[in-house]
Amino acid sequence: MAGRGGVVNNTKNGIASWDGIVPVQCQPNPSILRLSASLTWVQAHEPLHADIDYNKTNGVGPGMSFANAILTKVPNFGSIGLVPCAMGGTSISEWAKGGFLYDQLVALASGEGPYVEIVRNAQLGINLPNVQCVDAKGLPLEPDRVHLTTPAQVQLGQVLTDAFLQSLPSPIHIANNSCRRFSNLMFHFLIGPLLRFVLFIVPFT
Image 1 (cartoon, rainbow, N blue to C red):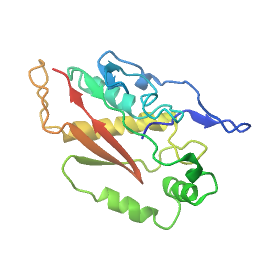
Image 2 (cartoon, rainbow, N blue to C red):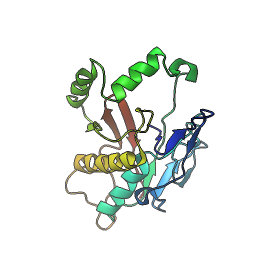
Image 3 (tube, one colour):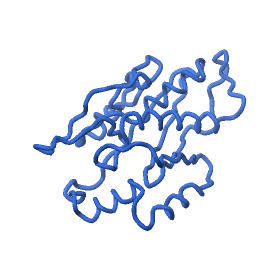
Image 4 (cartoon, one colour):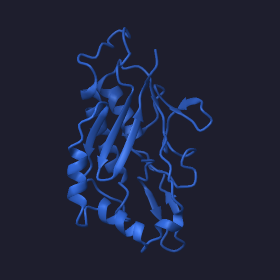
């Protein structure tokens, strides 16, 4: 999930562009880093996937909202390293509007079609180690009826934060920077239906 919040298609030329609006919940923070395409740690900012999913127009995703929410709820958490890794795998021609793949994706992502509830129930019923399921049904969509809007991305980041913090050992012993070692450093979030978000949390000591 690279994040397409604020990305709209020009109705005249069909070219996608990002509106550049960054919500307060997604502002940069010196304690939030990202692993760049050149494999160096840099301060994170929207759009997180700009140099990763470089063939697409990226916008706001849930990553920055997620990281900022963690630091708000757990001020002594330390630094957070985000590893953006979403990238489209099929050619754009395969997803042309009106084509089979496009229609199927719109139907599933917008909650339409005969198999949506089957997919949702399967995702919500997953019970595996290091896997958290976060339900995104009902969040506002962009006009394309596929991608989440910027406010929806922010809200999703908050929900991911709650799921992440609830999955950590309790209590979290980080009050005096005494311990930032977590048993689970990779969390695989299922954002139903059909959207997956793999999150790597890198605690810096």
